Length: 476
Length: 97
Image 1 (cartoon, each protein chain N blue to C red):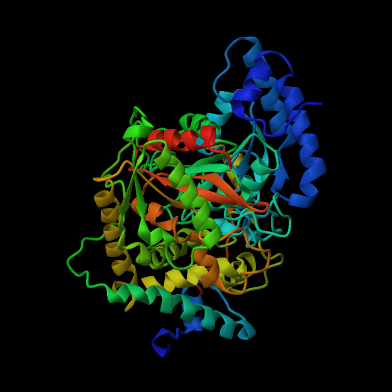
Image 2: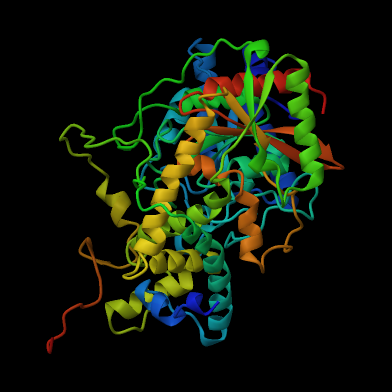
């Protein structure tokens, strides 16, 4: 029996190298574990067994030929809004229930080339719209730490699969917190890289100016390994950039940590406040300088996000008409094209998606564009400036990832605004394009608490170093 | 807030969606509470601020003028209705249009 408990990339690589087990054996161990244990957690929407075994054969050959790369033979899970050629890609929606991806996303091409093993596709809120995984059109995923609670969202399936040892690492996407919040809720590490560092080609779009793919993993080092493997400019994504993450010579005694007082105000669970402050104190005790900073427009970020994201979504999701991707309503009896659209879109989209499409349609419609959309774009400039000012004084910014502990399944489904508030500390980074990571910094009973580490654009390395310092030395 | 009462039916039709009669009220309520929340942006006097729509500020990104060849079979197999390998859709123009 291979022990999959808390298996990291480094440990698995060593074991594969030392021939303790083969990639095929490791893959089979995960597939068996998923079949046995995922019935309860429901993190996967589909298992890609054939693909996994084929990649495992390739990985074993690469290892035998001493051609292994950073992720050769490492089993992983992919959020089901990222396309894998020949596999279903549903985006958690009935609309794409039978859609088979005709090409690989760039990140998938990179993983395949590395010899990584793709075990399956993970659950998500429909079209990545949600903070709890409850908006999946198929079923909710459960938090492995407490099965009555949500795993966070929208990359909830990816986070739960990592936390439950049903893969070594996973890919997710983050538009307003969708990697960081579930990482926080499940007690794992997850990073949203700088906008543009990872290609979005093959990611089913939610809000294109905010979406970014990133890793969820058991620790910071694994996140860094995966990030390095998937990053880079891509000719198929015109917003992708070749910028290399700045090197950083990390010295805790020279580290200037900004703590924004806006991130510790009303609405923050006192238990989270305490755990995050304790982690910040730990940095201080080790010589880091703690500087109180202001991000004055924080209070407007969520409002800004809930104008910009639905506006972009309403345009991105206009392509779903039920004619090109798969059939939605069987035996269409309507007598004109508009009727067909109406019928398909009404049957295919879930309630939250409809709501966001309509919100976006409203804020972009004649007479409201200036008051909402244009204004939000201006506020976005202010939010970006807030961070630019702050980073003149500090190297990194620390705060809570989420104001809430993982909540109970069904607890917030009737109050969308309460659900949206879960993203209050994460959305600003997407608006400003900045990298941010969530790592565990404490527990309340069984429920994990996440610390968010924010850095200037392209300075993922200082995030990794700062996160690593806590993960290696701080006992939670 | 009355100013935030939006015509759900009208917006739905603009978005090619139909909202059932018994759901209208719920949509209306949720929209008003979200709009009341995002209305806080109106507090800000920001007429002089420039807009940010593209965070990377990249302009005119070009790539080689070379076609990408997809396997037609893969793409066509996704179409729910086709005739002689063409996508089949409903008539858009009527005789009396």
